[in-house]
Image 1 (cartoon, rainbow, N blue to C red):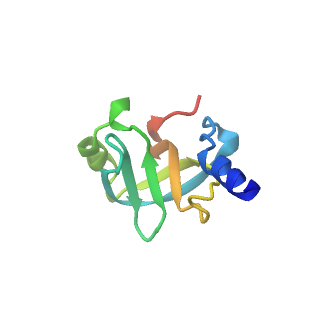
Image 2 (image 1 turned 60 degrees about the vertical axis):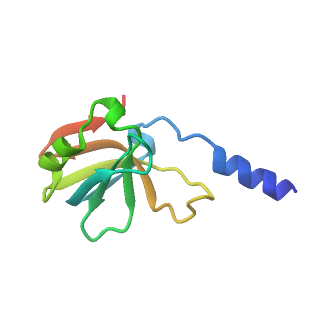
Length: 112
């Protein structure tokens, strides 16, 4: 029973606030930008990368999928993602984007 409680608590712990100290850098050529599973989530797909990079509630933050497609597809982008482990995603393939940069231009950031 104790193990189940610990598992549930770990699975439900909130994502920490984004900071340079708790983010990892991922860079690559953007293959596509799509709508995510959530109503306003945005997914950025990097070529030859099996990770799942998402901006939570991206369209609620004023981002547009069509505009991001124009700005990102076939360009080398740098994504900073919050490092966060959860038993729901033990291999950490789902990555919450905290910052998107292309050609030294910040397109999105939640890092303060």
